Length: 389
Ligand SMILES: [Zn+2]
Ligand SMILES: [Zn+2]
Image (cartoon, rainbow, N blue to C red):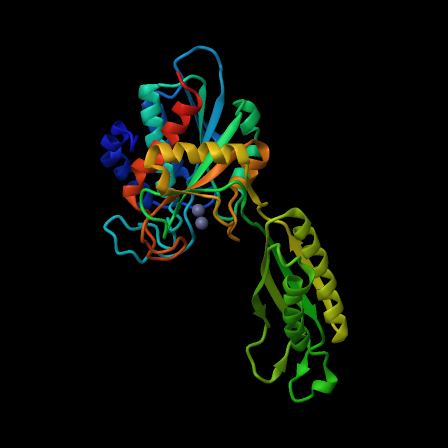
């Protein structure tokens, strides 16, 4: 079974929604236009329930299958937010909002889930219930967590949950899905190394925080090289080093460092936090400085449940054929806040090919509209095969 005919028919309409959302990107939880569009469409499709304001600005739609019994409840999730960056695609439907861009394809994810909703609401060729989850603030705002904390899973009795992300470089019409950890936990560290500044020509009269900061950056590399089991994964990237003064003859009182820590399991995550704090304090002390450390945990590891990853792979094979589904790929060190939903319920996150496009978060990236029938058919087939009428 290739893509569903009805969904192929809907492609021009879904493409129009996608481009409309693309042209009007909004950030984090501040999504008045996007959520109004989603709400209006869900109501127009005849969803049994449409609830805005879940997890601040998330929208939930409910579609019941043919029979009256409750049956299984499957959650399907899309993210709606854009990124704070300038678009350089030159497309006729490029962003009209300066400094905002749909550079991660969430415009496509939202449009695909809307297309799926339209199809499911008119066909209802399944038993049980589908909960459509449109979440805000995936890009750093933990909107997935906000919806889970707002009772998403219990309010609608969701049994299992699935999400999808487009993947540049994965050919059009192909899928990737893997069991176990697929994306990393992303934590952040901000460090202020404190010395005592003064004239750069009199280093003996100051406590220079800069050599301490440089030594700290180097010493932190040993978290990966010396403290982590070589068969496990960690990234410690210090990406910021700032002094207040731009003068070449001034030694500042402080140097600020900041970076990201990525891990794929909780033991390594705990160890990295402990070691980073120890190394920063001890290195600063070795140079006569002190350190303030602010360590903040971000999105957890995204872990696909084995059974659901297998179900998702089976569904993808039914849509595009055996050879076009990549199962069991190695994890990546990016992060994704669908992780919060997968901690609350069993489920899986799948990738759909975006073809040979610019990478996500690049100013020339564009969601590939030709991926729409594949993404929608996956969701529809998942519902119809997992909850047969
Ligand atoms: Zn992104
Ligand atoms: Zn994304």
